[in-house]
Image (cartoon, rainbow, N blue to C red):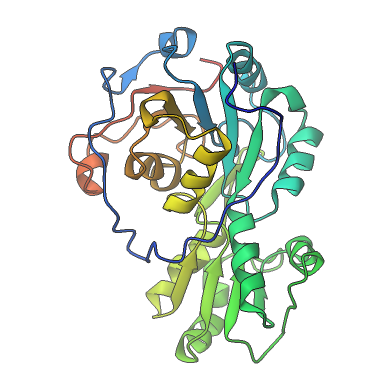
Length: 306
């Protein structure tokens, strides 16, 4: 039976203490016997102990335009097996918006129990500020913030909401002068999507995280929301009934978001190679490069189809 009594949408609280360097306590003993095996049989014979699945969306379930072949069927199978499925995404938008998006793409409502987003965290934090903020992103994202009561200022602001690149400025270097000026003025950037890139319809597209990296590089301060920071995992686990961590499997394709976040949260992780990694194998030095000891994902698969 699912940990969920009824299907739900929800959001997470803002992670204000994660820090820019991401230095948090790391759990290293959570591979539990699979050792990053490259095997489709893991999906076909997933251990019964995994009662809660925290599944990334973009790069695992869809590419922003279409569902990946077999992804919806996999989620539905997990549900049929009595597992709880929480969709966990760095989308810089509300859970309600993401629900509409995945529905329009064709993901059945019965394929998941709940959604948590990085965008909800940012919206919550910006609301608490109670003051006008600057904005970087698309007109649609600006509209979402304004609908939630956040006032957008074109100048003279102390905080800046970043949901991504503007449609007419799709290269990070086009923002250099603005970023340097804001950094010198002490403006705090709120990055509502830590992803650096996503694959949209088969094409790599820069995300808010790429601008936040550039802002950090010129001395700007950034507050990050979403994976790999702890609060989104805490909230996703709460949505799934807070089962023991050995009963939780995180699924994702982003090394520095999905995988790193799962490792730091002490969760087993299934790495999907076919997302932003474009089929590249899991890097052998990932754990060493990120201070994770001997941690590794329990398995890697080309896609959720197997």
